Image 1 (cartoon, rainbow, N blue to C red):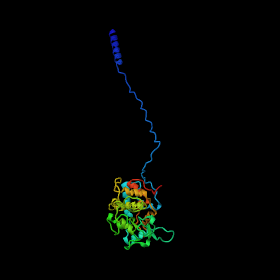
Image 2: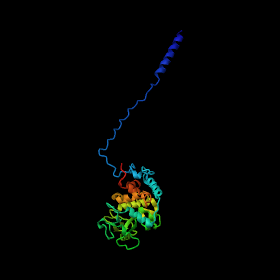
Image 3: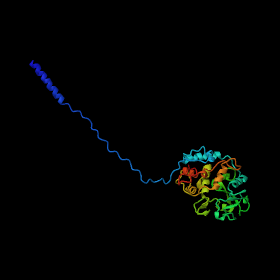
Image 4: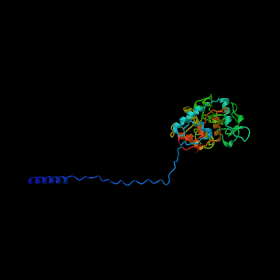
Length: 316
């Protein structure tokens, strides 16, 4: 009996020692999250974008919606350019003859409006407003009846290829050389003084400048938009750099900063609008069928080539 008591006591002693030697169970201590950063303070004087980019969110006039229905104006850069190239080519559905059709087309669009009766004068591109209707080579307007068909160069007008034949390598056979978006009424002598000079920067009225020809403050926007049209319609045949002087550093495809600036400086004129509306309507007798998109909205040049924001004629 005593033996069993001793064995029981020994077992209890071993059990107690084993329990007391177990390590205590530990739990990880969660550290509190660091203090969150406060929300950044709004700029008390936010700076507007100095050169806001056109968003293409346009409202087109009712008479232009059908013409531009295939164009995605949310596009920009070369994507938009490519779409417009296709449009200009596919809608150019009538090719005019240099004589007599180009003469008649110019007389149908370049006239000086009158209150009643038929127009009797045409505007002369590069003309000086101060010269009015006169025999000066710098005249602003001239009688329609004085169109020149190879006679005297004094006090007459002819057809000026604004993008020159020499620069584009074309003649007056139906095609590039008879595209009326590139032809304007001009004094014969003053047109001859320009010759094949490239357009260059200047101020005031038109005339020769160092290295080229300045079209004049009143005409430089017309010229720029015509050059943009010719570039899209005929692509590399009518590169801007072959007909004007300027930098291409800030454009992706050879457009000149000079033309972009002129498009900004000189807004679209009534004569440009009249010409565009006439040629965009194929029902007109001497209409080509296509339009100059940069006349309809000069801001399209900004969307394609960048630079300063030009006039947006399709504002909401």
